[in-house]
Image 1: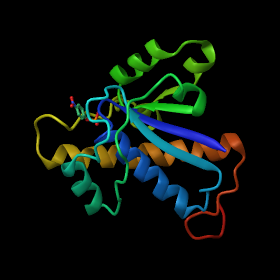
Image 2: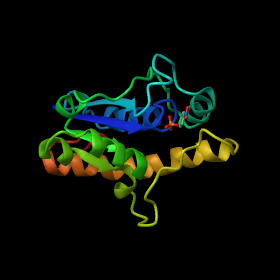
Image 3: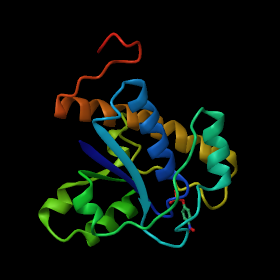
Image 4: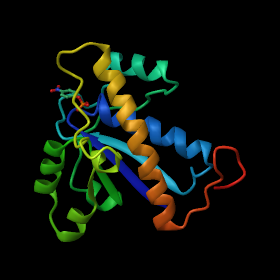
Length: 169
Ligand code: 4NP
């Protein structure tokens, strides 16, 4: 079992979207028994809350159901998850501060690093300002990055992916 935890600042916009997008890709490829997904946030301010309604609406428009309930990331997450995927460099820096040893540090990744456009480093925080474009952009970037993330997990762990058409890849 490979365990993936998406981490953003509030756990109500970007990481719930990462969770839903990767879950959908995993279901399409029949990998639900091999890969477990969760999300969390650096701050606990929104803990217990569902995703932001603006993010939920944008995600619905693209066929994703955001079901996560916000929670704050903890040091235990560095043991419970193989990968902690930071949605931007600030979140990555916060995770690095929390990590207590090399093994924990090695589990941290930057979501933008999976995006083929090298200029994409951060998934921009859509929470403040801006209109619906910010939320749509989050989904665009996360869909592209998640496809590469999943391909890497499949490769590295030698998983048998059924492929979208069920004929194998
Ligand atoms: P997220 O967006 O990190 O993508 O969930 C945010 C949500 C809430 C806040 C900041 C970012 N906030 O400061 O409350």
